[in-house]
Image (tube, rainbow, N blue to C red; front, top):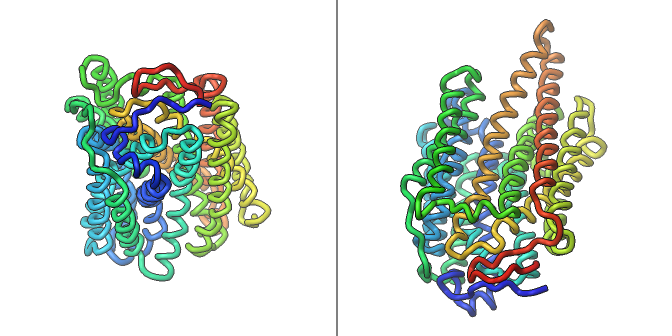
Length: 500
């Protein structure tokens, strides 16, 4: 196994040589904590919503915007955040992201009204869009040895994959034993620890070869992603024939298409084609998008099932996801350290997709008399293994070998793929589930028993569609990922390909 030819200068890595050699595992801890904060905030508020709604008095129709405002800002601004990190310097953007995220969290925690809470959530998403790509690009340029890189990305991938489940558990604990506002205030503690570590460990060196900012491309992709996420979010409360749904979706598709065309014309693209057209990277971006769309469905609908059908408390609901989290962590580390270096991503990621499809199909068997140990736990364990085989290898290969001045945008594209996939998947599955529940009740009396069965039917519909997402991902990743051990083209120095 040969060490990749990567630059270790201060500008490229954002770290001093001594920091990179002596403290890189502490750097991983700081970066992982920041990433955990960003990812868990996509779900931590979900369990707190009923309490927040009662406290602030907003309607059922408006409550989705507490979640959607975060996803809109985060998903639409990630590529801009990644390019700004490459342009300004990763440590600087990392620290700005941490401070901004914590201030927005404080504002949301103290919100006296629905409007202030939604504004705070949007600000969280915007600063998260600065923080997430800066964190991953710092990790990419810190760990250059293949063995250490595999370990680091195994841990990081596990954090990114399990953050949503951790958010559900933490949200349940804070809501039940403290107050819903602590689901936002807790970020102040996490951000303070990460900030202290970042100030001590990360170097403030400016980028050696900063890219120029592609303003037209940035505007196009930000508006395009906003249109897509907003359109699918509107589908939850409007019909598909509503202009507020298809109009935004159409505008989003057109703008993203124009953005792709513009990237082939501009001399300084915000998303250089060299980042996307590498087969390992392109397949990894697709894997993150598809897995995000499929996995977030289980968090949403299984949470409702456990609380409404089986009468679990918020805390017990969060605890129910822990075995999946543990399995995902173990599998992530194993996949990046032992499996991908020997077999390559082609068999590993598609197998993870297959396991995801099987787990979601298994969940369709749940009914009002199912038990956790016999009926819920087994498919959750299978899903944990599947996600571990997808997230960590995909994140590692999506950023492997990328040029130092493209590390931020490559990292942002990974996060964008997962976030936009999760947002679209959640909105689409929720719409399909709601329609299935309504259809079930047609011609039936609206009794508590029939309503409970209608909910089960809606969950089952969502699980089947999630299974279809994963099955599609298995085929796509099987076709696109190259066979054999991953080959990293050392773009940093234009060197020869290196086997990991």
